[in-house]
Length: 559
Image 1: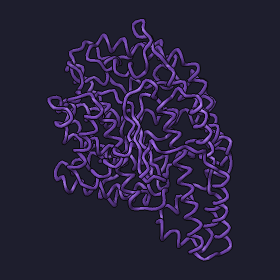
Image 2: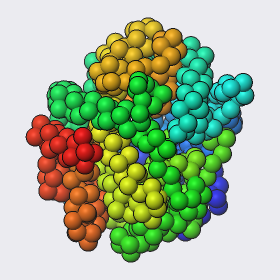
Image 3: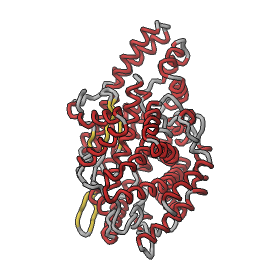
Image 4: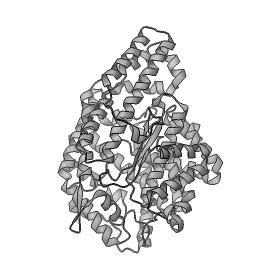
């Protein structure tokens, strides 16, 4: 097993990757024996895994040190080339050949369908795919270099991240004001980059025959049996059913906190003496207890986490150089192991973020163990957050171990967060709909559109620093809008399924763990609707399901 710190980066040879792709294509077109095609395809997969792992390694390094310009430039280069690399001609050859049935037998029907539908994504516009990654790299760099003027002192984003959730209202007000001021001050730069990014994505979509980027993104994210119509109906039902519960929750929080006015300086604060804190803020304490949790659930899951831990595939410790405000997990297909990145500040929410990411890595490892083809290791878009959100809820059964006397506070906070996320990510969905249907909108029009639904989606919350919000202070603070287009609605959908699965674990740990493993092993062999039926779950698109989950959260939060 190659340790993460033993990996030596070498720039992928994308020309060699093209040659290997062409060799498989030629063999398929020539009607070669399936064994010969399999051999060539195996060589292609092996080198493709190497290229992907090298690109992912560099991507990780760009977060570990967001100030390194050389790393940022190389990341933009390699991620751009990776985004532009495609197998359109090879896939066309497979789809039109006798080898198709053999490929389907080895990889499943859904991957073949995905290949066929996604042909439309890569027919043209390679330069726009490369440009998109270059812009994202610039955004990373800008965000990493930001400092904030807090009480006359320049502090990092990580420090602000700690201060803005202080139990001391004056401290968090000053910190949140400093954060808003910092993003407003850089609003012109962020706005320019966002403008360029939206227009580049629009050009990529139209170059490939789509009317706008929304259609392109839905195809990219395997939304084949449903699409914008169903997603917009889901968002409408969430507004109708869940937002009234959010309003009740906000009123309850205002009363609990003893506030005359509940403002945007008070959101995400759940108790007068502060949010739940782990027994120890030390990262080793967090990792040790995550290990105990997985060992208790299943030897298989425990061993998977131990392997990551012992081989350095967790980079969680705090650093001012790290990009803050984001945690992620990614597969390393050549090493056959997942990786987790975070910038751990020791709070309850930071610990919850890491547990969330371990849910992803369990799914990835379970699929890696089952399938050879790396394209089957991740799940389809609107399923992939179910394992991670389920683990957030399963971990509540172990809250005493992590939080001690604050365990019940943590449970309430996580459930309140689930409620807020269901509606909050619908808000992002509405905003993305506007910007990608109106790519020529001005920066100010985008800011105004983002700020417009505060009263709807944050009922009972008084928004502070309106002058800074009008300069993009709230909009540009969210990395999702830059790096995760049409992704965040997935969280809203997956929260509903996660609650059902976690409740099965709560009733019967053994059965719940078996269901979690069953979910992880699906990989990318099924679309969303097929996988939900296979798991015995109800579709999150159902209005009845939205209502059931709303009632459950209302009861659990005692609203």
